[in-house]
Length: 284
Image (cartoon, rainbow, N blue to C red; front, side, top):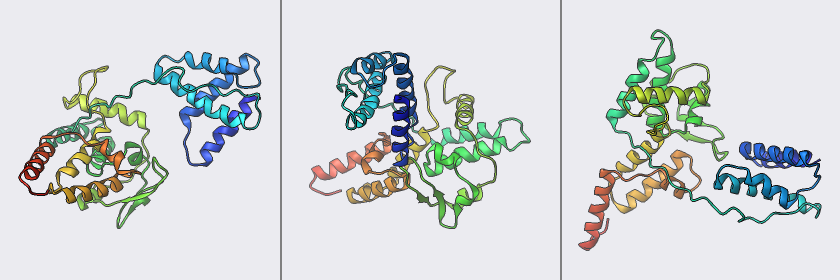
């Protein structure tokens, strides 16, 4: 049964540290599709028909590549499994979403809205004010903040365990952030995100439902940009700051950190000053 091969394939990837959630869902869907056709082996025609039912070019392409990896593995064992071609559906262009860089006033308004959550006498307003403050002042991923336990607070900072790239890291904390640490039960991401959207609208930072605007993840972008703004502008100092920031954020490569950067008046001013110094024969 192809479903058994799918399960082995998923377990193999997960044993290597991959979460493989979306891919597992797609592979199970494909296995169900094949089972309805009473097919025991992967057939290119069936793969393309199943992948083509996805609503977008990107989803069709992702479906195709996911099943193709399975097909390659099974074909090595049994040539009756066909390996479909790769570029049947083309590639959807990935556009970078413009990030919102919060001002200090906007963060203050967001935290003020959090402090006014109801019930007023419950721990809810304190919890969300602390959560958003922690993300804003450390640049943690939302998922990392939600998985923290009281035991992760050490004398040297927060211990972030087995994160996006299956790495752990230590995040130093300012004393003011350490004092705000509290006990409590974990929060599910959908609840946190829904509450954030409510708070952002209450603070006048987003429009109504269905309209775009700042995301909770933009607090991480803001941390990265503001951190770089603190650099002296000297080229070597900026390079050192980028390396430190990449480590602090838990990125595998400095190039991953570049994705978080957004042009601000302060950064553009530093770039202009550096360009002027270079034009005059100096080095910055």
